[in-house]
Length: 124
Image (cartoon, rainbow, N blue to C red; front, side):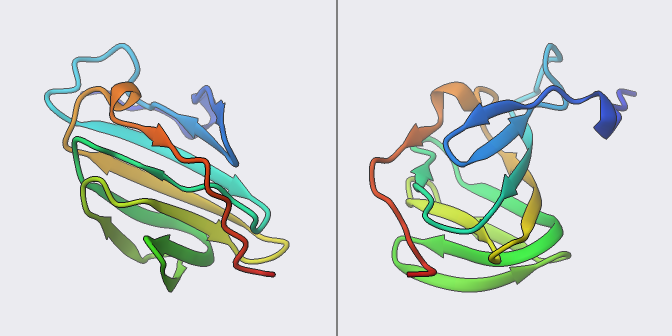
């Protein structure tokens, strides 16, 4: 059994967010997980995953999930499913933050992540 403490996670910077792999160095058995912290509201750039869908659990905070032009409110306890290849972003409410747990049925997220050049400004 592998248990990783939140306080021990090493976060890396991605555009507009911080991301940690709680199981770095462990055989992912065909999946990958990321803990993502997002501070502040838009503008934000979207990204997509060309090889897999993404399931997102909102652990803390509230804001908006944007998927290819559609916007929905999200809050702690919500789960979002992002289909494979769909541009998306999750944006905290102004002055707030979000903590997300993201699940991918792909063992190598590094090659399954494409940052996009567009800029979303849902507050403007």
